[in-house]
Amino acid sequence: METAPRQGLGTFFRSLIDFVDEKGLREQVRAAVSPQTRALIDKFPRPMSFLPSTPIDEVEAALLKLTSADVCVECGLAVARPLGWSLLQPVLRIAFQFLGQSAEPIFSNLDRFFSLVTRGISFSWEREGKGGTVLARFDGPDTPEAAFHVLRGSLLFAFEASGTTGTVTAPEVVESTPFEAVVRYRVSWT
Image (cartoon, rainbow, N blue to C red; front, side, top):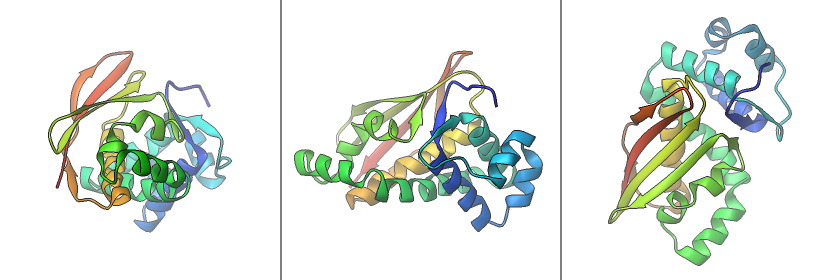
């Protein structure tokens, strides 16, 4: 499979397919993706290896086409849970000890958290009262819209992890070039 400007952990891909299976959509998704992605669906990559984002993008785009943006948001949250409660939990615990138990330490450190699971996606955070703005930069061209909705769901995990209540707005594409897509999410909590 060709290289891609973004990558995701094999565990992320497995969780993505688990969600597709829970929705009963495996065969429809398989029919909508490339033969290379079908092969990964049939034989998962190693859990801790990084794979090009292409198969992830294809599965997410098929999911959006078959369902809705809301289902992609649900997918992002479902995929974030196993990663957050296993891989990220020790890091979250330390962040809360030093920075306080709220969603803000998570949003202000998204680069650190996401770098454990993805490559080629970077974040900036601007706090505004009880909330703020997340800018996500997806490296490379042609990032599918579905990826923006899945990320929204993953960002919602910050509220579960911190034991707070809040919202993340629908993604707003600020810029899309052959080099990157920049997407804005407005975040608030109580």
